[in-house]
Length: 162
Image 1 (tube, rainbow, N blue to C red):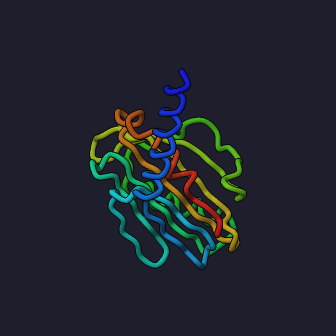
Image 2 (spheres, helix red, strand yellow; image 1 turned 60 degrees about the vertical axis):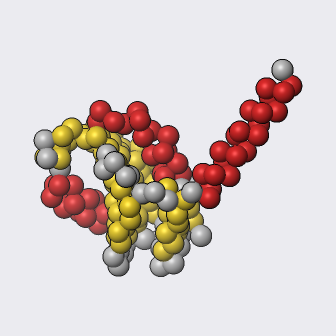
Image 3 (cartoon, rainbow, N blue to C red; image 1 turned 90 degrees about the vertical axis):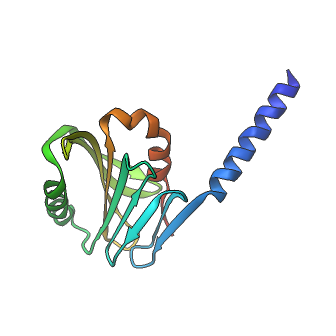
């Protein structure tokens, strides 16, 4: 029994080490945050936004830095972005206030379709240490959510203050 526990511990340590080695990080000095994502995911960025996509194209995260500390300003950007790419958009439940690694945030969920494919959408508005709002949209094919659930959680928890 001790041997099984020992090998389980070794496997967990190796898994943790490998996941840390196999990762990328984007740092935004103006917002004073870092964003973790798996190293095999594609990444594109410009001045105020970042997009990461899993290799299979089933999950996408879009990060937009809003140069304001007002959630209303972030909501306007959110509406514009979501309505430009998602049809049949419907809110799921009520927004929830929360804390993400010491940063105040609001989380909400929605569903819709992109090119006729059903998607689940997780939306976060995070007040960064620089008093700007980071708008985060995680979009996953509805039928593929469970397959990516663990990685999605890691990516969300990978938004860290500097």
